[in-house]
Length: 210
Ligand SMILES: [Zn+2]
Image (cartoon, protein in one colour):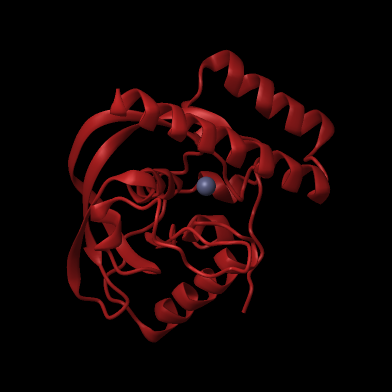
Protein backbone atom coordinates (compact mmCIF):
# COMPACT_ATOMS: atom_id res chain seq x y z
CA UNK A 1 0.00 0.00 0.00
CA UNK A 2 1.34 3.40 -0.98
CA UNK A 3 1.36 5.76 2.01
CA UNK A 4 1.12 9.54 2.07
CA UNK A 5 4.52 11.23 2.37
CA UNK A 6 4.38 14.23 4.72
CA UNK A 7 5.92 17.49 3.56
CA UNK A 8 7.69 20.28 5.43
CA UNK A 9 6.38 22.15 7.49
CA UNK A 10 4.23 19.25 8.80
CA UNK A 11 4.90 19.08 12.56
CA UNK A 12 4.97 15.27 12.51
CA UNK A 13 8.31 15.45 10.63
CA UNK A 14 9.80 17.05 13.74
CA UNK A 15 8.95 14.19 16.10
CA UNK A 16 11.78 11.88 17.13
CA UNK A 17 11.36 8.24 16.18
CA UNK A 18 10.99 5.77 19.03
CA UNK A 19 13.24 2.73 19.31
CA UNK A 20 11.69 -0.58 18.29
CA UNK A 21 11.65 -3.20 21.05
CA UNK A 22 10.65 -6.07 18.81
CA UNK A 23 10.11 -6.36 15.07
CA UNK A 24 6.43 -7.29 14.98
CA UNK A 25 4.36 -8.31 11.92
CA UNK A 26 2.77 -4.84 12.12
CA UNK A 27 6.17 -3.18 11.82
CA UNK A 28 7.10 -5.52 8.97
CA UNK A 29 3.93 -4.44 7.20
CA UNK A 30 4.91 -0.80 7.72
CA UNK A 31 8.36 -1.51 6.24
CA UNK A 32 6.80 -3.23 3.21
CA UNK A 33 4.43 -0.31 2.65
CA UNK A 34 7.29 2.14 2.99
CA UNK A 35 9.31 0.32 0.30
CA UNK A 36 6.27 0.42 -2.00
CA UNK A 37 5.86 4.14 -1.27
CA UNK A 38 9.55 4.87 -1.88
CA UNK A 39 9.40 3.20 -5.31
CA UNK A 40 6.10 4.88 -6.19
CA UNK A 41 7.63 8.29 -5.40
CA UNK A 42 10.92 7.51 -7.21
CA UNK A 43 12.81 8.04 -3.97
CA UNK A 44 15.98 6.28 -2.84
CA UNK A 45 15.15 6.27 0.86
CA UNK A 46 12.32 6.81 3.30
CA UNK A 47 12.17 7.15 7.08
CA UNK A 48 9.09 6.20 9.12
CA UNK A 49 8.45 9.77 10.41
CA UNK A 50 7.97 10.81 6.75
CA UNK A 51 4.82 8.68 6.66
CA UNK A 52 3.68 9.88 10.09
CA UNK A 53 5.04 6.95 12.12
CA UNK A 54 7.38 7.95 14.98
CA UNK A 55 9.40 4.77 14.76
CA UNK A 56 13.13 4.22 14.20
CA UNK A 57 12.80 2.54 10.81
CA UNK A 58 14.37 3.28 7.42
CA UNK A 59 13.99 1.74 3.99
CA UNK A 60 16.57 2.44 1.29
CA UNK A 61 17.34 1.45 -2.30
CA UNK A 62 20.07 3.52 -3.94
CA UNK A 63 20.76 1.15 -6.83
CA UNK A 64 20.96 3.19 -10.04
CA UNK A 65 18.42 2.39 -12.76
CA UNK A 66 18.30 2.95 -16.52
CA UNK A 67 15.38 4.64 -18.35
CA UNK A 68 13.42 1.37 -18.33
CA UNK A 69 13.78 0.99 -14.57
CA UNK A 70 16.31 -1.87 -14.75
CA UNK A 71 19.01 -1.90 -12.10
CA UNK A 72 22.48 -1.01 -13.42
CA UNK A 73 25.40 -1.63 -11.10
CA UNK A 74 27.92 0.69 -12.71
CA UNK A 75 28.25 3.92 -10.80
CA UNK A 76 28.12 2.04 -7.49
CA UNK A 77 31.22 1.67 -5.34
CA UNK A 78 32.67 -1.73 -4.43
CA UNK A 79 31.29 -1.46 -0.90
CA UNK A 80 27.82 -0.39 -2.06
CA UNK A 81 27.60 -3.42 -4.34
CA UNK A 82 28.19 -5.74 -1.40
CA UNK A 83 25.09 -4.49 0.47
CA UNK A 84 21.77 -6.24 -0.25
CA UNK A 85 19.06 -3.79 -1.31
CA UNK A 86 16.34 -2.77 -0.71
CA UNK A 87 17.47 -2.17 2.87
CA UNK A 88 15.14 -2.39 5.86
CA UNK A 89 16.77 -1.27 9.09
CA UNK A 90 15.22 -0.75 12.53
CA UNK A 91 17.03 1.22 15.29
CA UNK A 92 19.92 2.27 13.01
CA UNK A 93 22.97 3.54 14.84
CA UNK A 94 26.20 4.92 13.35
CA UNK A 95 29.14 3.09 14.93
CA UNK A 96 31.89 4.35 12.61
CA UNK A 97 32.01 7.55 10.51
CA UNK A 98 35.08 8.57 8.55
CA UNK A 99 36.17 11.31 6.13
CA UNK A 100 34.13 14.22 4.88
CA UNK A 101 32.27 14.66 1.64
CA UNK A 102 29.44 16.75 0.19
CA UNK A 103 26.44 15.80 -1.91
CA UNK A 104 23.59 17.69 -3.53
CA UNK A 105 20.63 16.22 -1.66
CA UNK A 106 16.89 16.26 -2.12
CA UNK A 107 14.04 14.86 -0.05
CA UNK A 108 10.53 13.52 -0.71
CA UNK A 109 9.37 15.71 2.19
CA UNK A 110 10.82 18.85 0.54
CA UNK A 111 10.08 18.15 -3.15
CA UNK A 112 11.78 20.24 -5.81
CA UNK A 113 14.60 21.58 -3.63
CA UNK A 114 18.19 20.40 -3.86
CA UNK A 115 21.14 21.68 -1.84
CA UNK A 116 24.69 20.59 -1.07
CA UNK A 117 25.06 19.05 2.40
CA UNK A 118 28.21 18.05 4.37
CA UNK A 119 28.32 14.35 5.25
CA UNK A 120 30.73 11.58 6.17
CA UNK A 121 32.11 9.62 3.26
CA UNK A 122 32.24 6.22 4.99
CA UNK A 123 29.88 4.89 7.65
CA UNK A 124 29.13 1.70 9.52
CA UNK A 125 25.53 1.45 10.66
CA UNK A 126 24.27 -1.16 13.09
CA UNK A 127 20.61 -2.12 13.39
CA UNK A 128 17.96 -4.82 13.04
CA UNK A 129 16.91 -6.28 9.69
CA UNK A 130 13.36 -7.18 8.51
CA UNK A 131 13.50 -10.39 10.58
CA UNK A 132 14.68 -8.55 13.70
CA UNK A 133 18.26 -9.86 13.49
CA UNK A 134 21.16 -7.57 14.25
CA UNK A 135 23.43 -6.65 11.33
CA UNK A 136 25.86 -3.96 10.23
CA UNK A 137 26.04 -2.07 6.95
CA UNK A 138 29.52 -0.87 5.95
CA UNK A 139 29.43 1.48 3.01
CA UNK A 140 30.51 4.63 1.23
CA UNK A 141 29.11 6.22 -1.93
CA UNK A 142 25.52 7.35 -2.31
CA UNK A 143 24.33 4.67 0.12
CA UNK A 144 26.39 6.23 2.94
CA UNK A 145 24.93 9.67 2.17
CA UNK A 146 21.40 8.27 2.06
CA UNK A 147 21.78 6.45 5.39
CA UNK A 148 22.90 9.67 7.09
CA UNK A 149 20.08 11.67 5.46
CA UNK A 150 17.42 9.16 6.52
CA UNK A 151 18.81 8.86 10.05
CA UNK A 152 18.39 12.62 10.43
CA UNK A 153 14.63 12.12 9.90
CA UNK A 154 14.57 9.91 13.01
CA UNK A 155 15.80 12.93 14.98
CA UNK A 156 13.15 15.20 13.44
CA UNK A 157 15.80 16.83 11.29
CA UNK A 158 15.62 17.68 7.57
CA UNK A 159 18.47 18.30 5.11
CA UNK A 160 17.39 21.94 4.82
CA UNK A 161 18.19 22.33 8.55
CA UNK A 162 21.83 21.49 7.74
CA UNK A 163 22.34 24.45 5.38
CA UNK A 164 23.62 27.89 6.29
CA UNK A 165 21.11 29.95 8.28
CA UNK A 166 20.49 32.20 5.28
CA UNK A 167 19.98 29.41 2.74
CA UNK A 168 17.85 27.40 5.13
CA UNK A 169 15.59 30.36 5.89
CA UNK A 170 15.27 31.33 2.24
CA UNK A 171 13.95 27.85 1.34
CA UNK A 172 11.64 27.57 4.36
CA UNK A 173 10.16 31.03 3.80
CA UNK A 174 9.66 30.34 0.11
CA UNK A 175 7.77 27.12 0.82
CA UNK A 176 5.64 28.71 3.55
CA UNK A 177 4.77 31.69 1.34
CA UNK A 178 4.45 30.12 -2.10
CA UNK A 179 4.06 26.40 -1.45
CA UNK A 180 5.82 23.71 -3.49
CA UNK A 181 6.68 23.75 -7.18
CA UNK A 182 4.31 21.80 -9.47
CA UNK A 183 4.95 18.12 -10.27
CA UNK A 184 6.33 19.14 -13.71
CA UNK A 185 8.72 21.64 -12.14
CA UNK A 186 9.91 19.01 -9.67
CA UNK A 187 10.69 16.58 -12.53
CA UNK A 188 12.52 19.34 -14.41
CA UNK A 189 14.60 20.28 -11.37
CA UNK A 190 15.42 16.62 -10.76
CA UNK A 191 16.73 16.24 -14.32
CA UNK A 192 18.92 19.31 -13.93
CA UNK A 193 20.31 18.01 -10.65
CA UNK A 194 21.08 14.64 -12.27
CA UNK A 195 23.00 16.39 -15.04
CA UNK A 196 24.92 18.50 -12.48
CA UNK A 197 25.79 15.42 -10.40
CA UNK A 198 27.00 13.60 -13.53
CA UNK A 199 29.17 16.55 -14.57
CA UNK A 200 30.62 16.82 -11.05
CA UNK A 201 31.42 13.11 -11.02
CA UNK A 202 33.07 13.27 -14.45
CA UNK A 203 35.13 16.29 -13.37
CA UNK A 204 36.25 14.41 -10.24
CA UNK A 205 37.18 11.33 -12.28
CA UNK A 206 39.09 13.45 -14.81
CA UNK A 207 40.96 15.21 -12.00
CA UNK A 208 41.76 11.87 -10.38
CA UNK A 209 43.18 10.34 -13.53
CA UNK A 210 45.67 13.16 -14.10
ZN1 LIG B 1 14.47 13.02 3.36
